Length: 396
Image 1 (cartoon, rainbow, N blue to C red):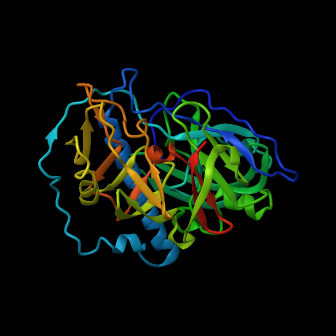
Image 2 (cartoon, rainbow, N blue to C red):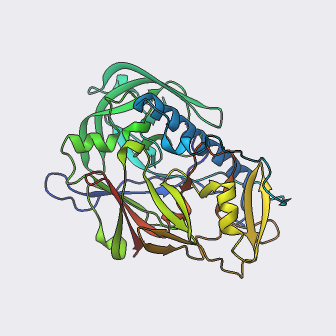
Image 3 (cartoon, one colour):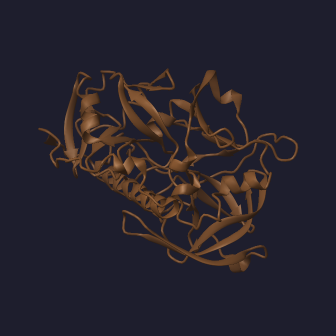
């Protein structure tokens, strides 16, 4: 599953002071090379490719949902009977400089004593590794389940192989029978050391048979964690962390706003508003930008002055004079979270215009907004599997 093409080198592992009996700990997160060059120019072609991969991830998740739950996902049913125009309005085409690839958040993990970098993705539910990262024959604790898996992705790569259970170590936490897919094909490649993906979604969307729990839920079932809570705090520079087993209060300021989540939906999904418009929002650490159905994005963005629309491979995008400061506010659970100036500029065009990190797509496989990295960098987000809820607070 090539969710991104290249990583920032040097993924580090670190843990904070742990509670007795393995409490909450932290994994330092680093992200892959961004879609932004050293000259701050955005690679729209690479972004378009990333969006295709994300779309395919969601199509796979919807297929898994139907197989696991016996019916189509409710968000898919909202699209039935809807006529979707292939036009995106009267926009021009803008030529942007092609630079390096996308970004995802990664840290260190160890299976059977073999340590490697891995993406942490709240938009999927399986743990998979490249053949060069994990070799079950070199692990004395690996158990072959004799179950196979196969998943194809939007960049043409396929992860396929056998599911094993093995001892997992992450930031000082140790599980004993955690499922990992040993792929016989390389599905993540590049110059970085990250060679796998660790899904943090719910079992309803997993590719693995449902008797194999996602790694975090397996740690929870083995009583490894103080609580079934993890917390993402992502920053543009250094200091991004994934807290496992509890909440790090130093990562946020003010109070936490909680919203309920239905685990049977598979996704970390909530009702929200963007500049007053109601949407369905999937909170996804495996996506770089904020993506929504074209008509909904156009409705929101058309009310913001100073923006000019353009298209790339059918994706609706916007640019603006960098001296301006567009106003974009998410309302979740009755609390407003306004994107800051740094979050609202996703690189520049070759003419020095700032690019808005909110894009519209007609080809989304479900009727929801995929809320990724841009939003994560403005809040600290708590994912609570004990009480089936998400919490949002302004970053400290």
